[in-house]
Length: 309
Image 1 (cartoon, helix red, strand yellow):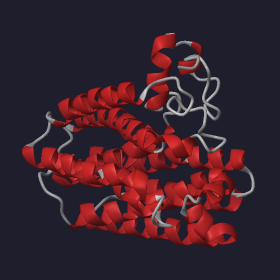
Image 2: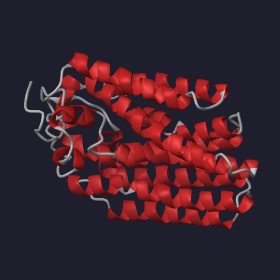
Image 3: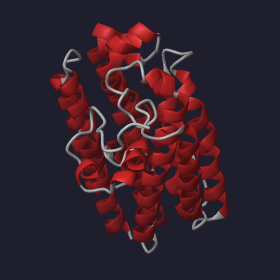
Image 4: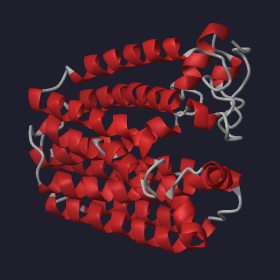
């Protein structure tokens, strides 16, 4: 085993590196608590759907608890997903500059320990899921199929971001399953919009590794689009805004939600205009900024739910 205090290349200066006990750092890094942006991005569709479903039901009495449970569930299950991803990708990660310092390829933790930690996180996620109705429990469990196959997609398709979108947008269905006990057209359209958003932002993220990915044969939309990335992002982000807008219209939202969507759309336009795919640091900053885009939309949906309750 290597030094557990050694930092991950693209996650320096965080609380895990500076405050967490040394023994816990490989585990926290494995679940990305040193880089929580992915958990926030997984959480956003959950919160969107929870607020929209509460507005449709005209009942926000359970919304605070649902928001908290989704927060816990998103952080735990994103950690479980990253642990699984790192287990399956440990040999590939060792060949990429940005990822070779992760706990498994760096030797900070064994595969057996990583599996045990994966089980622990999954059990916590199950405990959260069991707080909901039966339909929501089954809906949540169904997402595990997508999570399980995602790490292998980059080996066989140029579109692994689509599969990531299916997984990271699942929360767009969960809010309806939890609050209304069903998945209707509004939920499905919101889900489709979120998928396009994920494809867009993860394409930006993948440009950090495009050169290394080309050397080792890993596929991504970043490599597929290349110099056409700005045009591709315009398509996917436009589809995201249109489809989310259609879901809002189906849900009968009022003006706060539309303001939230407009702010969300403006943020996506800013990302496209600012993007330079040859600047990895900028790609990372723009990718991370999608949390703020998601929160803008959530704020509008939450205000709408409060008005309609």
